[in-house]
Amino acid sequence: MLGDAHSHAPASGENPSLDRNLSFSIGLNALIVIVEVAGGLLSGSLALLSDALHNLSDVAALALALAARKLGRRPNSAKHPYGLGRLEVLTTPRWSPRSTGAAQPS
Image (cartoon, rainbow, N blue to C red; front, side, top):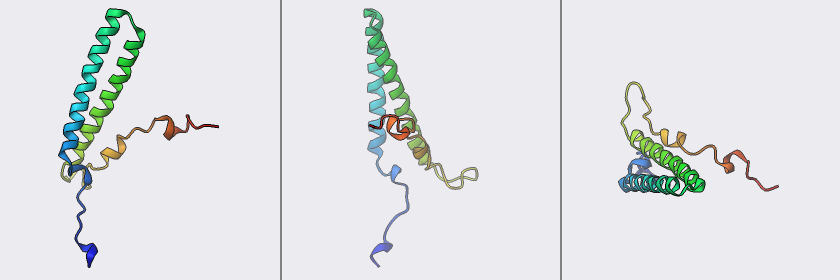
């Protein structure tokens, strides 16, 4: 049969370059936060400070995604007999306007 040759391995562990890309994005966004905070404090710009806070939340979300990917690849254990592969699903953004329906046009 043609359908017998397939794998049930989680797809999240198949692309190690994604971890590298996430780490790079975390570092780049953290650098942007530092520059914006410094620029906002030096110039007295509340807009730069508020954007720095927004980018800080992006850093936290990316770090959460990276942690979930790493934990999701751990093998099964007695405490977690099905593994931790569902962590990636649980760390997806649930409070976006699209998911809550807040930004729906009338």
